[in-house]
Length: 371
Ligand SMILES: Nc1ncnc2c1ncn2[C@@H]1O[C@H](COP(=O)(O)OP(=O)(O)OP(=O)(O)O)[C@@H](O)[C@H]1O
Ligand SMILES: [Mg+2]
Image (cartoon, rainbow, N blue to C red; front, side, top):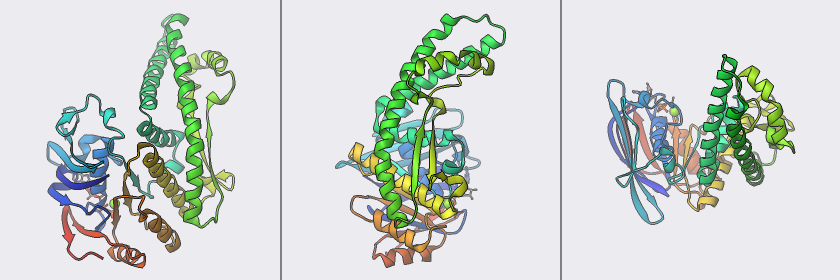
């Protein structure tokens, strides 16, 4: 799959631009703050229906304007598709494929996969478990529609149950019967989602280990350990036994919404014991694995967005990464770099061709001579 054309109106620092892309490597170069990452974000919107950086849609409208639109011509399985994402102040977000609007935004997820690697975004390593859960949920949701629907339902029932717990603690007479349907749903759905997460992690880990070894040339031992309240054999009893605690804390204190994925280096927490370069390598290995599992399951090659990937990686790791993504089983790639010369020399070293675009304060100029 690849994107042939991108048209932006009023998106972040772009007033009105139209771009054509190469099917393989595209590089956006230009000074800090010029709008390189914003272009990747526009492509991210066409795939994921939202920004990778700013989740408040209206904040992505060009200052002083009322709406933005992102139009892309995407080529997939021998056919062209026009994908449109539009956001106006005070209105529902529009997501259309070939003129047809989706009933739900979530119906769009997985149709045009992209994988963004932004190695500065180490929240996934340093932040709370919720961020890691979201990362794996996002992948699973693209691979397995049933997973996504069940997760949406689980979160809905969780919210309802928590509201009830709050009402009980704020004076409403406690009625077990009111809770019972939510308990049942959360136990059944939770167990199904737990099984899917556990099975998926087994598959993910094999590829992840191979990727990390490839990037680091087998220098470090890393691991991901999935842990869940649902691991215990009689989860249902544990869930029911947690009721008094749930009532006291006014929320559901047990279940898959508390799952975490432990990132380890030599069996110790990566966020404490990994160097910056090791953390970035870990993050890149995670995202490459994300890319590969999507490719395998959807039989579709995602677009790869590499944001500032060359910072903080040593030249060996940069070369290993580029060697990998230039292989035929990777497709279209977008790279941003504030240092044009660095990207050019990396590509030259590996004798890779690329289209270059110079970005300057919301203006884009394709560079005629390719590397
Ligand atoms: N809603 C908006 N309206 C106008 N400009 C915006 C909006 N949101 C972000 N920007 C501008 O976009 C610019 C940042 O763009 P971007 O993050 O793409 O830069 P970059 O080229 O990737 O820079 P760096 O090299 O530092 O990563 C900033 O100048 C910011 O003010
Ligand atoms: Mg940037």
